[in-house]
Amino acid sequence: MPSIMVVTIDNEPHVSVPEAARMKGVTRQAIWEACRRKRLPAIQRGRFWYVALAELRRWRPHGRRAAA
Picture: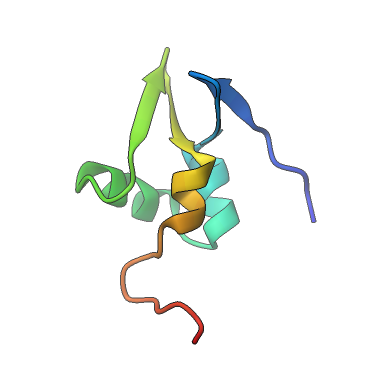
């Protein structure tokens, strides 16, 4: 499994949108849509967008259910 690139922003670990998509097994567009709908908070630094790792771990892609 490849390592992930983590960036610290405001003392919290964040990952880029493409990295978040890889981690969750969804498309970048799915991550962008969740951010646009305010279901997944994102922050912009320069030209790049990042998602807090803690929020990403809690986030469930639309249409998927957590294992019971």
